[in-house]
Amino acid sequence: MRLPEAPAKGGHSPGSLVRAIRWLYHFHFQDERRERLFLASVGFLVTFAVVRAITHMIRAGIGPFHNVSSGTLHIHHLVWGILILLLVGYMWLIQPGSDWLSHATALAFGVGAALTLDEFAVWLNLSDVYWAQQGRESIDAVVIFASLLTVGFWGYPLMTDFARLLRPRQ
Figure 1 (cartoon, rainbow, N blue to C red):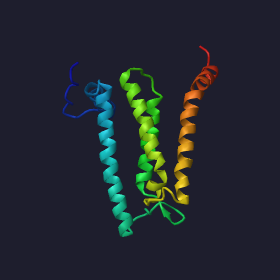
Figure 2: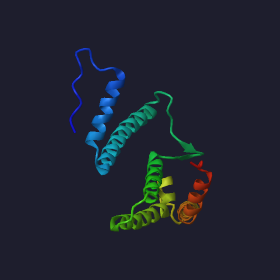
Figure 3: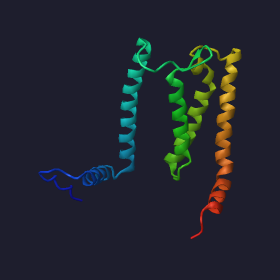
Figure 4: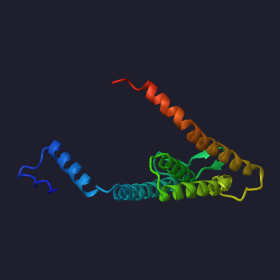
């Protein structure tokens, strides 16, 4: 593959510039793993910078931002981060692929999700409420997540058949 030609003296038209950027992106990320690492890095760095800026603004009382709370409970962004990681892990779990690594990571995901959700009430409350009444929140979270995993496992063939049934015939 050759690189796109340099812009003429007058520059690229917006359409040709977009095509050149798209071509460069696909040229450099032919390996899906490398592309995922790049996207994860961008997501990580941008989110870290934005969250840090927002938390400083909240602390200084500047702008429209405020803490997220449920009653008197302050919900830290750690909670959203863990939930997003669990969701992404689940989404990767249902993608096709069957080799020893996919089996090992599926098992590790289940172990990590169980360890994490067993302490859901602790990281939600940022306090050791494991054996307190609030500790019940962990059991609720485990039941909900286990239900989602079970629906994904048992319901996938049904949902696939529904999709085939609803897909327009060609």
